[in-house]
Image (tube, rainbow, N blue to C red; front, top):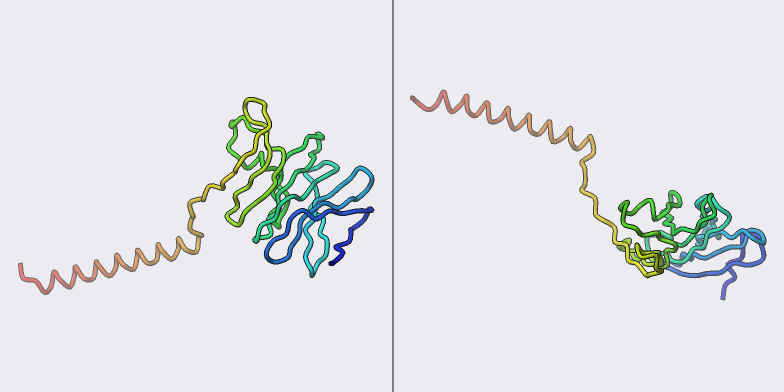
Length: 172
């Protein structure tokens, strides 16, 4: 057994673990403040922050190190979050507007990025949900576009020269 410790406060809870041994959970900061954390054997406990409020709870982690949970925002409302290594994002900002859903808590995330949790549906009832990310159409980077353009110009020149050659060689 290994004690994961705390960053501050008196207690922490571990809620989920991935295949790399990364753990997410919640760490007490003060009597009323709690923070979602990501723990690994190299860095120890890393505070994931909040959506602007006093607390966050880390509930699930996938093998990509993405964490889901719930957090209070500046207006003191609780919403589901996704933490992806670059920051914490309100899941309600990542879904299609106008669905009528308010996502309260992310409970688990798989390696494909699918998230399940608790939300309030359009009929104002608490229901489980499954969010499946939509694959974005890949837009080539500018460097790739430049290579495609140069290739197209080169192909056009080859065709032009071939036509000139054919015109000289084929009697009309």
